[in-house]
Image 1: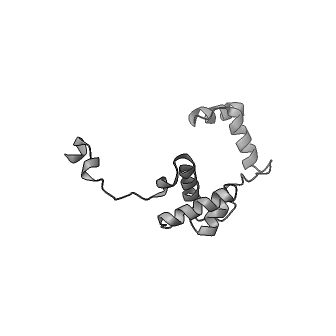
Image 2: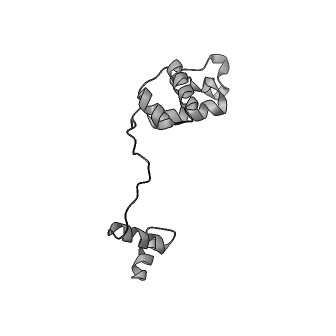
Image 3: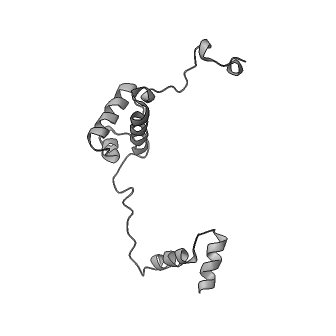
Length: 117
C-alpha cells in the first residue's frame, strides 16, 4: 500500500506520503474529522460600500474589542476581510489609508512624465 501513497505523493507534489495516508484514514472514517474553527461564525462573505467615517468607526470598534474581526464584521454587516484589511492598514499607517482613492485621478503636478504622456 505504501507504494500507492508514494505515487499519489509524487503525482500531486505532497511533501510526505504519510500525509496522504493520514488523509485516507480520515476520509474513510477511521478518525473523527475536527473543525478548523474557520467559517463557523456567520460572517458576510461579501462586503458592502462604506464611507470614510464608517470605516474609521468600524476599525475603532474592532480595536476596542481586542481585534475581534468576525464580531465586528457581523455587527457592521461588512466582510471579515474588509475589517481585517482596514484594521491592519490603520495600525500600520494611520487613518489616511482608510480613504477610498479608487477612480480618482491625480493632480497634474503629481503625475510623472510617463503618466503625463
